[in-house]
Image (cartoon, rainbow, N blue to C red; front, side, top):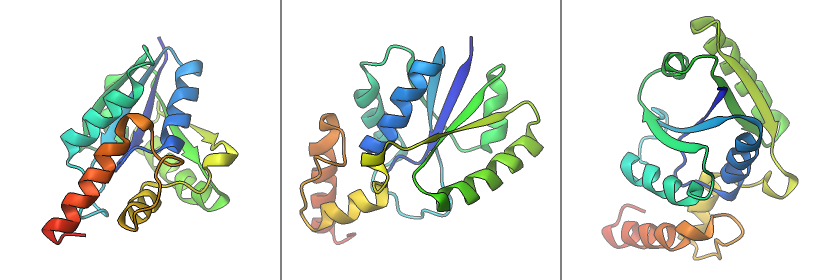
Length: 167
């Protein structure tokens, strides 16, 4: 069984993320969406457990997709899956440079680990979690950016953040 790991902070999961996960689920026997702790992102909108629950709701229709989390190096996390492949989405050429560098580092740490890059579908190339959060803060319609299953959750979380003064 070939396992793909789709890592990310998913704060929140976007239609672009879902597009990559769905496509990976058609290529691989099993897909693990791994919510990672990103030390460069100090104040996530959603707690780790909340992000995992949102993703579970969004991928519920994909029988070979599961959700997990890790605070370890991704290359070390992947060791638990024999022959695992990291699947990373690329939106632009600028993504390639940093992702290729990370793939080389991961392969140095775990020589058995391969990375597969899937280019984003054209209609999702401009979507990122950061863009979604910014749009939400201005009250924009998030339907073109966020899966319908979690749209209300994202809107409510932004409202809570604004009320508490953390926005």
